[in-house]
Amino acid sequence: MGPGGVGKTTVGTIAARRLNLPLIDLDTEFCEGINNIGQYIRNNGYEKYVIENSRLFTKQLSIQTRPSLFVLSSGFLATDTSPETLARNQKHIRQSGTSILLLPSLVPAEAAEIVSTRQMQRGLGLTPATETAKYLSRISTYQNFADHQIVSNKKT
Image 1 (cartoon, rainbow, N blue to C red):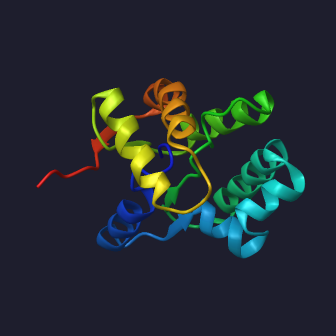
Image 2: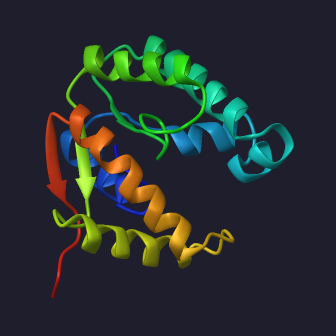
Image 3: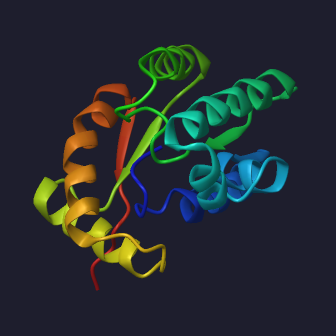
């Protein structure tokens, strides 16, 4: 789990392969089973996306027959919409296994800058200031729910 741009999909793919576990990337599942996330949000609003994403997680969790590795969407545990859904998501995470938070740095300002830079490279029409503010406003929530934290940015 973690904010957008921390490497969840990359690390999750590698970890699932090495651990021989099924990988359930919630963003991929949403895009393949429901709609492109950006398009869905434009058509239905962010709050409806958060609710539908939570339903998808609950469904995916219920059909797993063996331990699995989930890559959660960036706002899954920390968003300012749909408090009931957020509380349900947080409860699921506490009860469903071990959570690992990926961070690009343990220094919040440095991490926010790395995330902002990565998010700008995605071409989603985001702004550095918004992505920095989003990271800084959500990071403490993620840290409160993480059983483990891993720094995902390797400096060469």
